[in-house]
Amino acid sequence: MPFTTIAPPEAGLAADFADLGLSEPILKAVAGKGYRTPSPIQRQCIPAVLEGRDVMAAAQTGTGKTAGFTLPMLERLRHGPHARAGVVRALVLTPTRELAAQVGESVMAYGRYLDLRADVVFGGVSINPQMQRLRRGADVLVATPGRLMDLQQQNALRLDRVEILVLDEADRMLDMGFIRDIRRILSLLPSHRQNLLFSATFSGEIRKLATGLLHNPVHLQATPENRAATTVEQLLHPCDMARKPDLLSHLIRTNDWQQVLVFSRTKHGANRVAERLEAEGLAAAAIHGNKSQGARTRALAGFKSGEVRVLVATDIAARGIDIHQLPHVVNLDLPNVAEDYVHRIGRTGRAGQNGHAISLVAAEEHELLRAIERLIGTTLPRQEVAGFEPTVLSAPPLDLSGGRGRRRDGAPRRDSRPPAPRRRR
Ligand code: AMP
Image (tube, rainbow, N blue to C red; front, side, top):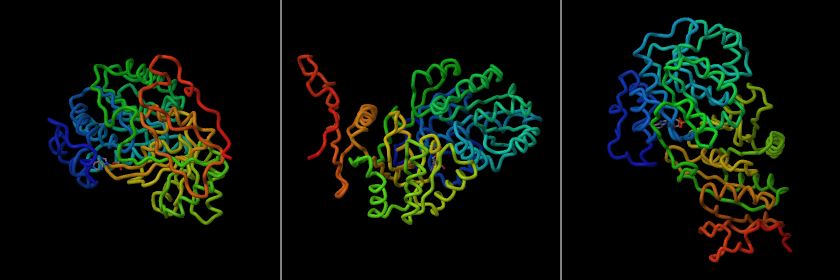
C-alpha cells in the first residue's frame, strides 16, 4: 500500500525510491517488499542520512521510519570495509525486545541482496549464542540497552568502531528507565560517528539527550508533534468501570471485530480480561512484562496470523508492535500519561488505512481524559452504548475554545474546577 494517501510528496522532494540515492540491491529489496512510493519521513530522512547528517526525527511507528533510517544506513555501510571480529559498525537501540526483533527483520529484508552481517540481541533469552555470533562482528547490531550492556561487560563486542548510532523510540527508552544504560553506551562509542534519533514525542528530557548527542542535526517530522494521525477515527464510550469487560466483549461481538488490540493499564488487568474473553469463547491472549519472552512472541505471532482475535497488552509490551493495517484499538483503561494515548492509537490506521480507536472511559478517569484532550487539542466524540450507559456521570466535554477556564473579564470561571463524579438518578 503506497503512502501517498497520507500526504502528497512535498515540493522538491523525490517521489520515487529510485530518486533518493539508493543503489540497485537496496531498491530491489524495497521493490520486493511491495513498496511503490517512499513515505514522507523516508523522502526526507533517506537523503539526509546519505549525506552523513545527524537526524532528529519526530516519527511514530506506522510512518515508515524503520526503512527511513535502515535503507540509507545500509547504503552507507555497503561502501565501507566489512565488520571485523567483535566489531559493531552500526548500532540500533530499541526499548523493547519486540521492537528489536521487528527492526532486525527489516534490516535483514532490506539488506538481503547485500553482503553485510546483521544481528539482533535482546534479553529474556540465553546470552551464550549471542556471544558466539558476535565474535564474528556485525555490520548492523539491533539491541535492547540492558542486554547490550551485559554483552559489553562480558567483552563480547567492541563499540569503539561504531560509525552510525540509531536511537529508535527514544522517548520510550527514557520512560522505561534506560537513560543510565544509554549514557554508558554513549561513553563507549567513538566521538566521530553519525547519530539518528527517532522519537514519537519530545519532552524536555529527550531534548536534553538530543542536545548532547546530535551535531547540527536535520529536524524531521512525520506527523505534527503530539498529534494523532488523522486517519484514526477516535471515539469514546462512557461507561462504569465495573462494566468495561462486558462492554468490550459486547463491542467485539456486535461489530464482529476480527483483530483488536486492547490496552490495559496493569498486567493483572490484562490477564483478567484476556482470561474472561477466552472463557466466553473469544480467542484472546495477554502480553506484558511478566510473561516470558516465548509467551510474548507466541501471542504476537498468533495475533498477526489471525489465530488470536483479541490481544490485551500493557503500554510497554505493546510498544513498537507493527501489525499491518491493524483495524481496531480499544483503550480498556486510559493511560496515566497522556502521550501514551497517542502511542496507543498510533497502532491503528496505518499506511493510509482508516483505523478505529475506541476508549472506554469511566467517570473516575475524567482527569486523565482531560489531559489527553488537551494534548491532542480536540474533544473526543462521546457515544453511549445502549445497555451500558454509565450510572456515574463523566465530566462534560472539555472546553477547547481558548477560554482556558477563565471568563472574559479574567475571573476564574465557576465551572473551571473538575466536577466531582455525579450519580445518575
Ligand atoms: P514503521 O513505521 O517503520 O514501523 O513501518 C510501518 C509499516 O509500513 C511496516 O509494515 C512497513 O513494512 C511499511 N512500510 C514502510 N515503508 C513503506 C512504503 N514506502 N510503502 C509501503 N509500506 C511501507
